[in-house]
Length: 335
Image 1 (tube, helix red, strand yellow):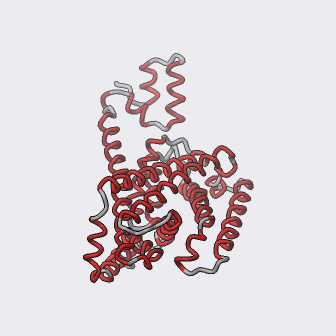
Image 2 (cartoon, rainbow, N blue to C red):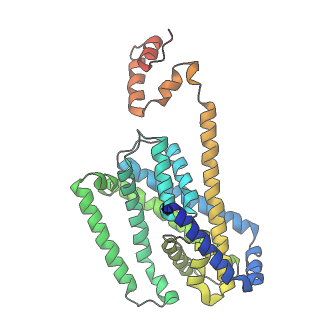
Image 3 (cartoon, rainbow, N blue to C red):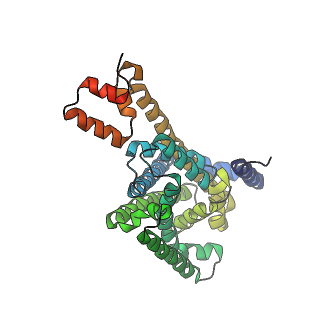
């Protein structure tokens, strides 16, 4: 029996992280000085910016899910999104899979099916790719790319956008359902706005961490590092992706300083993600703790029904159904 793909991802992430550590052993003193030299207030601000980015991206996801026909509450969707943050520490695809699985498990009747939820990720990825293409000129100098690389990126992203709009307009099944947000001017505007908030928060966090370790980095450098982090995040770099991206873009400024900034990026991103996940766990525990016991009355059964069924019964109740009649409808009437 072969090793599961998720297992291979974890193994590759660990190997990549150990490889980076081995390569930096000789510069450990410089690395430690850079990491410990960052002010605590700056670290806290960076963690807060990461949380802002995660919440904004979650809201963008909610816009896409609701446009696809979902009626799930913001609270439930945020909890599912936060669980994906844990998986994303190893690989972005693993994080997306965990997020979708958690949402379907927590609200199966109030969310589209899995294929449509996968398609609902595409508008967010498209907006992020478009922003990366618009700012890809920041990679030309650090990576020695040809001057026309940003033009190619813009043409490629533009072609994908036209294809998405054609699919959405055709109203083909699951894929078009996931892309429904693109058919709405209001939905598209809200999606762009929330993704921009998330991206600006990440750029600000990058700039703070780069300058905190003594790298004289510009906003363009911070953008280039963000593009590199997202690109390398598609590979199984695991927790070493921040350091790898910083060294790739800012290695000429000093490998130790760039790595220190990358380590701080990873650390603040991890703490922010875990804080978001911790809120979800505490919130779920609170909700379950406050929920009444089913044996204690019919209202827990009412709360457990899908939103459409629950609404119909509540309308009937307020229209004249008695308490006893409602318990009979729910199948919890006493003998």
